[in-house]
Amino acid sequence: MKTARSIAILFSLTLYGCSVNVAGPDISSTSAQPNPVSPSISTSVPGSGTVELQASASPSPPLTTQIPVTWANLKLAGKMVFTSANVQQDNPVLKIQVLDLVTGQISTLFQTTGLAWIYYMTASSAAGQIVMSYSPPPGNNVPGQQALYSLPLDGSMLPQLLFDPPSANDQYLQAEWSPDGKYIYYVHSSAKPQTTGQLYPIYEIFRMAYPTGQPEKLAEYAFWPRISSDSSRLVYVSSDPTDGRNKLFLANADGSNSRQIVLTGPQVPDIIDAPIFSPDGQAVLFSAPTPTPAYQPNWLEKMMGIQVAEAHTVPSDWWSVPLSGGVPKQMTHIRSPVLFASISPDARLIASYSGNGLFVMKPDGTGLTTLIPDLGGLAGMVSWLP
Image (cartoon, rainbow, N blue to C red; front, top):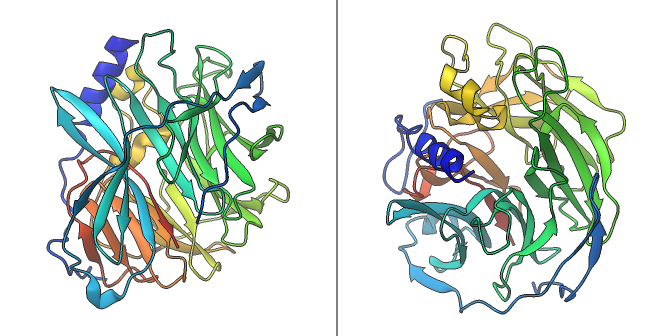
């Protein structure tokens, strides 16, 4: 496992050769108190027994730094919870940090050690918690397998295990809060071959009422769940395990009434990543490769089982399509990898994580403004909280 993960880390560090066309503080594209966590809460997951959430010792107070508020003219409010990375002693160190948009203060809530890895992270002001797909360092009787953990937004505790994968072939990937803080949506992945001609893992979307509800399967062959601002609708991406092609789907929050959002026109992408409802709720924004010859996984990706969820490491842009479907509209011209978005609480702007930093833009993709120009170049996430 250690060798495989070391190769994966090395591979991920080589994916970011393209640069986004944004520089400096202003860029234009062309075109609450946390709820208490009980010391011991029982929950169950598909294919496994009961897991106890054990309270841990409080970590050290969060480290803070200060950056200039170069975006003061935008009158931004609230906080952004985001991931970042750097290299220490030849190992990537991933961090979960909080940017105060008024003062420019950055607090570090958590950082990895050893070969630990944060694959996905999202924060909920309603629940007062972060939920993340996290693999702890191997050893010390702790499996290095990718599982779901929670972390208080105030940094008062270390990560707490939520779900352990049911077998060595399984892992938990993307995890999202419903905006009302009542549900965790998450993706279960199995690398065990299940269909003829399978090249990619099998993905399934579940949700669980937080903190003690039972898991419900919402969709098969699907990942990238995102929930509307009123917690009533779900958008996700389907994945064909034989060829990796993606399709966009819309459903009720419980997975019912699922239907495909059909993309038409001359440039229908095979890869669709990181969908999110537009600020007005009438369209879906998604990341897709900038029009080039169709992407095909190379031999190394196939050998290592690189997931389709990681294909957004290719140079991409933000696109939009109405909920009724139609021709996708290209919103940006930045050719940046690992795009991921979060809508501002007032629905006025969109925050975007990218392989080249953290920026904000208007709902139509114009007025790009950089907040933090360098987050380490690895895939990451951002949540914009009040």
